[in-house]
Amino acid sequence: MMATLTETNITLNSIAMTCFENVRWVMVGVNEESKQVAIKPVSKREVDLQLVPKEQLQKISIGKGYARITNKSIMSEIQRVAQKPLVSAKCGCEFDENEGYLILHLEDLA
Image (cartoon, rainbow, N blue to C red; front, top):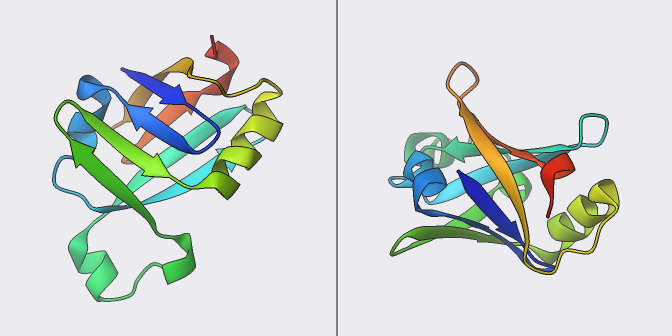
């Protein structure tokens, strides 16, 4: 699983995107201490019942073989935590089955 980070978006490769195939909204969190980004799928039911505040929802666009989350302010925060420029920077990621979210490892940025 790989993610590509730019100044404006996170693009997930075809393997990483399988976690989000039936999802249109996600929540994105940045852990400064562990230098990780968590992307949690949000179900349509959770959106419809307004279980997640609207300002925490991020749209995920699904294409052929990729998924993309575009948000410049989140990417600025990720760049600050990573302390590296995000110009098509690639990092590994893994899906945490127990917690139900994808974890991007910023210490792996290349």
